[in-house]
Length: 223
Image 1 (cartoon, rainbow, N blue to C red):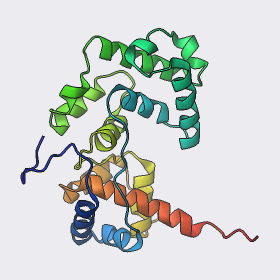
Image 2 (cartoon, rainbow, N blue to C red):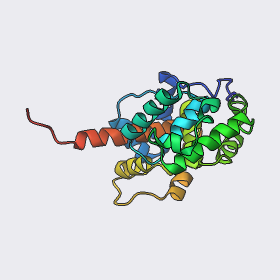
Image 3 (cartoon, one colour):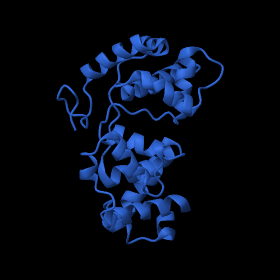
Image 4 (cartoon, rainbow, N blue to C red):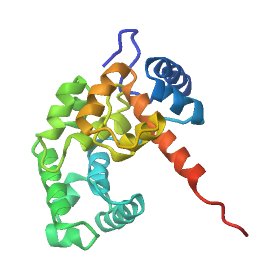
């Protein structure tokens, strides 16, 4: 996939591109201007693509980063290689021994079956436009809109997606606006339309701004 200027859309954006997009976003939305002014430079979040990448995102749904990392480590050690074939040698009870919940064990097996049967082809997924790729991912058991958007952003480097259901993004925008209440997912999707074609950078900016505000609010520990 190529952008209008011939630049690949499924490669990780470079630092200069992110910087230019931040400047453009700060002119499009006063709240993003606030976030831009307060947030240090950041790089694009990048994760492995393909079957292991999507499986890892399933593990990260609705758990802490530390908990997901621990489960992923146990799964890697238990499977040897995280592939559809190694997953399918384990039933739900055996996967649960690695720390997966029953629903996530079912989702992981369903993903492995879909990959083995050709119902999801990660190489072909890269050739689809954002809407078609989203539809293909959401058709899989256990993959919702947030997971699909984050996979395409982090694992394929797609630049014009915005996972408005993410609470950190909602809270980041609330902080930047000085509002009392977070914007709803539906309202935030509508708001993000004005940030095209840089919605992915807007998401990274709000994540980084949220993290920076949390860091600044953290009380100093006296030694």
